[in-house]
Image 1 (cartoon, rainbow, N blue to C red):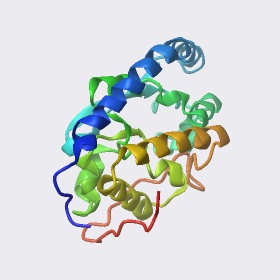
Image 2 (image 1 turned 90 degrees about the vertical axis):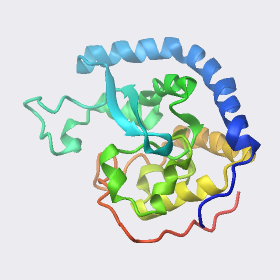
Image 3 (image 1 turned 90 degrees about the horizontal axis):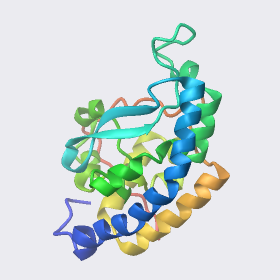
Length: 220
């Protein structure tokens, strides 16, 4: 689909209202859980407790993503810094499979760096690797969860995942966001699609510059 027309009210204002209406109470309610998780991470993995990294947000502009740390430090003697699988810990797998590592991102939602629903924020180094169509995923704020996350999460290959991100951009609505939030709860409970086969998370995106993507034929 070509570039979207002028966004409707929900995308311009209502979506941000939903983020605050749900994000603020969730942040407050999960603070005790975050304190406990932070204490466990400090005891098991040491410091830093939080993982911070620059990620592209709305319009590709950088913001700081904050999550609980799930891996050993790259300079630890028992790991291969080039292989995430050797850095991933048992605690890290539990945090990722339950999405507890994502809880600090609620502050980013309240600040406006992220949204509850949108394409997941990937790496800054991927920006020049996207085709023109794939880059459209940055026309909305990145999300805590998204259309790709409830349709396979990390188990979906890159072309399909990025196509779903662009499809979401073209179909943003209150109904779709509520559906994604509801399905996210189920995906977390049954722990679907945490990683790609043979990978600790998902293999790096190498780029498909010039390859057009078609939005998936998916109804909602």
